[in-house]
Amino acid sequence: MINYIYQLVSPRVFSVEYADVDLKDRVVIRPKYLAVCHADQRYYLGQRDMRVLRKKLPMALIHECCGEVIADGTGQYQPGQKVVMIPNVSIMEDGIVYENYAKGSYFLSSGHDGFMREFVDLPADRVVPFEKIAPPIAAITEFVSVAVHASTRFDLAAHARRDTIGIWGDGSLAYVVACILRRRFPESRVVVVGKNERKLSQFSFVHDTYIADNLPDGFRVDHAFECAGGEGSFYAIDDIIRSINPQGTVMLMGVSENKVPINTRDILEKGLSFVGCSRSGRADFERAVRYMEDAQLQRRLQVIVYEDQPVNCIEDLHRVFATDLNTPFKTVFGWNM
Image 1: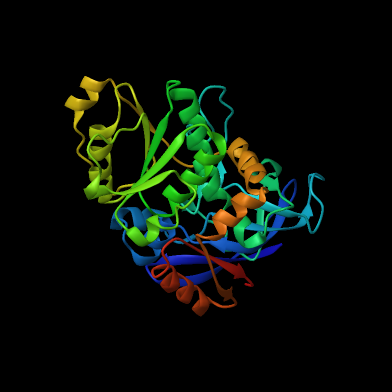
Image 2: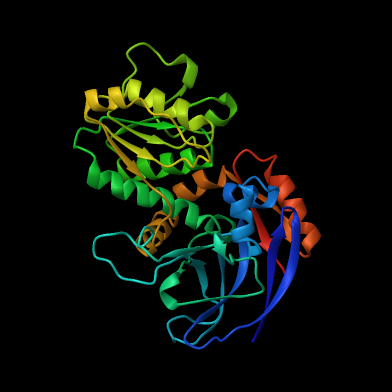
């Protein structure tokens, strides 16, 4: 079966690749809604190192997607069934290392074609069904699953005193992490530290929000999630080390292209634990879907989703990426290619 794959061949340049695909023992899915990630923007704008771009491109972008089953050679899914797709592909089982960190695993839209295709073919274990989630919201399930994964690792790593959990960052990642922490740890006080008052105003469901350069005297948290990323990582981590109580756990989630200096003296003095967290696996997707079927969580997630016009041609792709640069949180679009 011939598939149309819409690949980024160089910054801001798309091309169509035609591929003959063997669909035996695969679930065939028609993408319906896709969401843009910061990683997609960095590739599209050419903001990665040229050596990285030469190695990764050409490549279809997008790893956040929901769709409908066309056919299933495994017999596990029915045509028309609504599903989300797992972009992390692990080629080995490991009872200790999570699948998203396992040696030999790879990620669609990072060196392998993502979901900008006419149809997507995946093994059955890379597909998770859903029913009670609006498709534009379901498109960001992968994003939500990353927060679920972080909350799971936090629950295993952090000591039991969780009176106050701080989140540094005021973007989409911080917002989704806040949603999941409020859902999963209802007894904890969740506070958010950011720099943009307009964005922080959207975090109405947390206990408090603070401007990073105006933290009150005596401000303390028991544990922290760093969701700033980029150039903001240094400032967020520095604030966290200053504000966290002894033996707190810090979940590092923000991606930075550059090395970030860290105050190791105070880390040692306080006995802090730092946990790096990235991507997610099937168990995280399944839990994310269960959470997202809750009407209240869907309403909260709707706040950060901007639905752009559907994509019907390559020119529309350029419009979506331009739109995403001007939306404060997540850009979602229908896929009619």
